[in-house]
Image 1 (cartoon, rainbow, N blue to C red):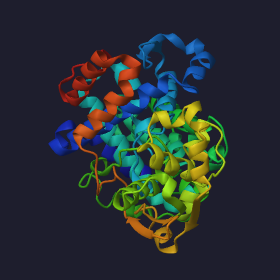
Image 2 (image 1 turned 180 degrees about the vertical axis):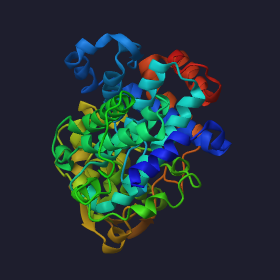
Image 3 (image 1 turned 135 degrees about the vertical axis):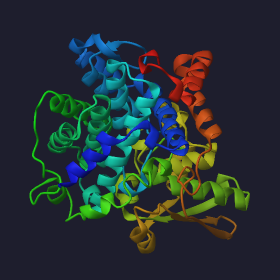
Image 4 (image 1 turned 30 degrees about the vertical axis):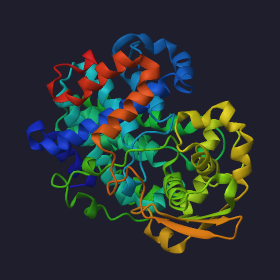
Length: 443
């Protein structure tokens, strides 16, 4: 069997009763967090611009956009996944360097709405999408991340797997959905190393492509069975000889959805260890920013490659700037959506503090990536004092998880400005009881 066939057999056979209460609960955590990312992103470009661009597919169909507008399923998947990746608060599977929620849950919701699926069927599809795609992403490893944006590439498998589950494809059809999705997979890292709207579009494309792959397979379209693990397939072309046999060793036994990272800051995840370390050191030393002469931050190489920008101008650039978000955290105590307003971007205090920051790569921390996301932070004060702090992980990682209350608070903070507090609270209650929902279209 090819790796696509192995994953497809797992996905096609997965039943709600195969999932423990713990797995169901973690799936709900992922959905709550996805909604927290999706709704604020839905009222921002590029999602709002896509509504203009894709107008022919709107105001009809059986799926819906964030504020209730009707849409065809593929376009709903495209726009909703784009929205969920826009404000940079969506979940991460660390070992795969990948945001599974944005494409996977968008695809599951679009097909779930169109099929009138129950909440439990929807959650089962989400689990299938997470398990298959995170294992593909983790196997592709760091070599894939050198040039490719995993959320755009690997996310296609998550979307195809979830959509296939809700379309009730058999193992053969499910295999063809994954294989067709493999050849749709795309998303270049260079697209977000300068200011652009491309990064969230990667998640949108992955969701749309995954839905299309599943719908096509349902209609009888076939794909190349070895397109993932063949000698000229996805793994070889976009990676460095991945060892596929390792990807299925614990399939169905250990569920990756139980080990998600949920963001505590509204920016690139590579910036989190420096932010957390700087805040901890500031608290430890009990100092104000005006007392600091120099800030030394060492971390792993990809963090600097992706987020080493010392001159961000736009909000998109600032979310990928360690100097900007660390300075913001030290001055304001947090890095939430307010950190990226035009007023904050022009704040001279942030810009002045940024000039005191120095970034370097630590070879030991670099070797531990992607399994560990750590940082050393050292402050030199104007009075001659200095102190260091080692941040071994990020708040929100599996070793330091956000609680259910943390996720609920995050949801209310981000969703209330969009829906209003009463509607946000009502929706949150429904999401925490999704297994009891008879039809996800009612959401």
